[in-house]
Image (cartoon, rainbow, N blue to C red; front, side):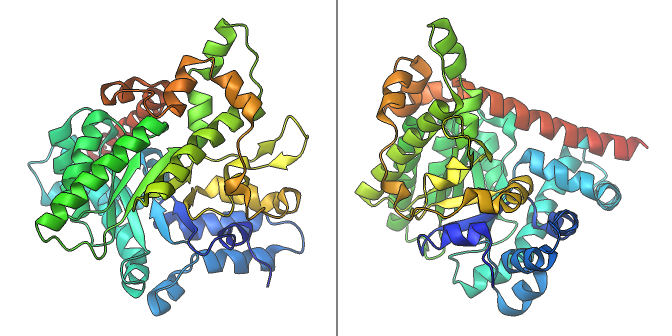
Length: 400
C-alpha cells in the first residue's frame, strides 16, 4: 500500500491532522475528475489513496476517514453551488416557497445554513466515533460583517445550531475576537480565520482563555469543545504590503525570502502556544506547490517546513491534486522540520519592512488595527465578493 503524500505528512506526528478545505458534498465529483488525470499506471493507486482520505460508505459504516475535519469559506461554498447549480436552484426555490417573507439575503443565508448542515451531517459519524475529537465542519459568518459584533454573534449561534460537530469561523478583527470569546464561553467550538499575524494569534489565545474561564465558572460542558487558529500562509506574503514596502526602500525580495517570512511568523506563534500549553491548535491553510528559486526544486514549504508539528493542515482540492502530481519531486518529510530555525538573514531583511514587523512582533498591532492589515483587507474583499456572487445566484434563480 502506497501512502498519499498527506498521509506521510500526518505520520510525522501522531497528533497532526489533515482536513478537507471544501464542502464534503463536492468530494465524489472532484475525486473522479482527479482520477481521470492520474498518470498512466497510477490510477488504481490514486483511487485507493483518495478512498482512504474520504469515503462516504466507510464514514457511515465505520465512522472513520483520513481527513480529520472540514473547513469551508465563501469562495469554496460558491464552488460547491456551481458544481451542482440545478440542485441548489431547486433548494433556493423550495426555501422561498416555505418562507414567503424572506428577501434575497434571507434566502441566501437559509441556503448557506443548509449547506453547513448537510456537510456536517455527512461527517458526523466521525465526530461520534472519536468522542468529539475529530469530524468537525467549520461554517463561516458572513465576511461582509467583520466589524459588526452583534451580527456575527447572531450568525455564529445560528451556524452552531446546524449540528453538534459544527465549528464557527470568525474573522481576525477586533470585533471577531470579542465574539469568539462569547461563543467559547457558551462551549461552542471556533475557528479563527482571516488571521495572519502573531499579534492576532496572541489576541485569539487570550479570547479563548477568557471564554474557557467563563465557561468553566458557569459549568458549561467542554468535553467536545475545540479551537483552531488559522494561519493563511501564502496570503500573508502575497497579499500583504511586503513587496510594495520593499520596492519603496530599494529592497529586492525573492519568493523564498517571502516564504521564510511566512515560516517565521507561524513558527513563532506555534512555539509560543506550545510553551504556554494553550489548548488551541494552529491551522495551516493557503498553501502552494512551486519552484524554489534557491534550489530549482519543486517544493511545498507550507507543509515541508512544519513536518513534525501537531498542527492542522487544511487542504483545498486543487492543492491536493498538485501534491499528488508532484509526489516524487517533493520527496520525504523531515520529521524535525518544525524545530528548524527560520532563515536568519531573511528575517533580518524583512524586519526593515513595517508590515512584516506588524506580522512578526508579538505587539506588532493593536486589535483595532487588525482589520486594516493588507492581507486581511484583500482576503476580506475576496470573501465578500464571493458572498455577493452567491446572493446574486439566489436572485437570478428566483427572478428566472
